[in-house]
Image 1 (tube, helix red, strand yellow):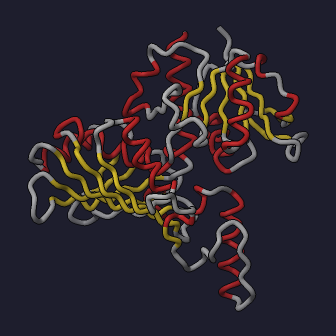
Image 2 (image 1 turned 60 degrees about the vertical axis):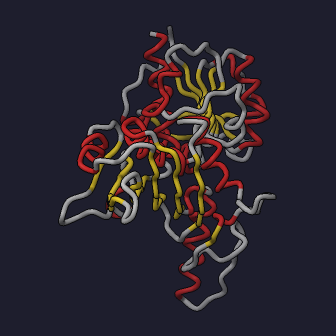
Length: 337
């Protein structure tokens, strides 16, 4: 069976990383089409020795492909993903549009990838929130050993999670601030350069948490265990790439730290940095441009034997978005061949 792929939003931050993966990962894909809004239609993108002309999504025929990667936001996904599915195309969507809907699977291949093996296609498959992806990859081996009951997590999220325009805004604000010029804000309600924006600069819900924070709860329960209690405090920080998380975990069973670290070291996609000389990975030094989720600063709680603290980082454009989608696509192709 021939595999034809459409990349919807191929000119955005995540779409560009996804295209880079296609250049370096050998997948049996016979044809690739890049789709975007009318603003980007007609542009050319270089891929594997060819120039691919970007097509206008309003006129695109999704029956011409059997897989589509969407990274163009919730509004585009809401309008076009169902059309693609009805046309016989399986959609891997990076937006939040379908994540809470029980009808559509929410997949991290290392955590619940077995759901893909017996899945009837075509389907709309959701990519989790980038902060959730790295969190669950880190705690899945702990959950397998000791059953995680509760997670308290503080996130420090880079601006690339908002998109390319936010990257540009941080660049411009930093330059203007250092040169003593006026600092203009557009993407965020407050200046992001040299600042920290609590709640990841999102509006509060009725319970006092932001939607960004509640995504951590909703999505962790849907993917890992519906009984798990997750409370998140999210912040947007002036970092270009890479999300960081301070994670406090409570389990049902007493934790053996050596056993836990050994289990984590053998878990796919997870890299433990916990030596005497280095135990605190950073987004810039370790995660940026890398596929793995990095875990360090592993400490037993001072007061309880069933609690542990971690520092978790990842390149949010990779495992948090493009890589996770690529892993899903690869598994689906392998399943049908």
